Length: 375
Ligand code: GDD
Ligand code: MG
Image (cartoon, rainbow, N blue to C red):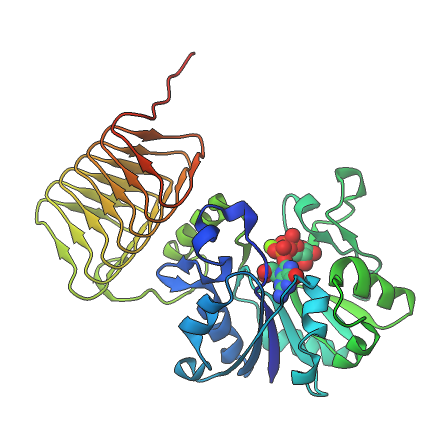
């Protein structure tokens, strides 16, 4: 079965992480999100996937190549200019064939039952079926109210609160009869949510919503990036954790060295060659990438530390994200969903709070950043 994965977005709300890495390639418990998404599709027999990219396209190609490592066939197509969600699929129409295809937003972590979705699509004799998921705040999404028989009533993309008539939103996974792409203008920015779907509805084409209570999270923001890690480690979604379970719910890759005076609080995931120094404390709910070094006395909780980062002596990292190869001097404090990009050097006694975001490759001299409380 064929699928299209939309991976062309800029991931703006996840900057600075997405300045150096496109959002679908950000690691989730040390595996790129897109790899988890592709393996999820493959599990249901979708083994030929067209990746529609635009922003930092080479990163996808270099990591996945032709897909053979995953036992899949991947076709990479890159846009010169963003063509929008539907324009992007029109642009790869020549690879689709005549059979029903699945189209997925590339920024979603889910365990959706794709077999049940296809059965529903067939049973309803639908032309388009849109997976729906309940959320607390639908205003950041596409609202999709249904008739009692499951037919879609209307599309309200990014509605205001007074338009919110249901908590079911477009979950970003569609099953589509590719014939509909004949009516999409080529080489033009065109949206599923604002253009093709409302237009098909007006034409009376059978379009159904498939409400699902599966695990669903879009990786829009740093808070959600952290939540994805926490949810996986708390087993709210069953993604296999890499490495060996060295004790209950602590997973470690190869050649990990943990000082005997260090404390690891589960759940935790440690990449290959992680080194944890004396009296350091790591966890709970921490994920450390490959080659991360945690120096003596440092403490890390509820955080994600990406590959090659170095956490200096007596640092404190709480509910935050530290980018690849970033080096922190002694006593640096990172807290409150702050995000440090890749390749930063923050010398000793700096403090990052209140969700501050530091751009990649910045150098910060000792003691330059402090937060003073005025209350
Ligand atoms: N190739 C390509 N070209 N891909 C694109 C483009 C483009 O021009 N624009 C967006 N994408 C990709 C993004 O990379 C992402 O994976 C997906 O299409 C959706 O785009 P977002 O920018 O993340 O949209 P959104 O999150 O605001 O809203 C969409 O997703 C929601 C669910 O998370 C809509 O489909 C909403 O209706 C939906 O509720
Ligand atoms: Mg999105």
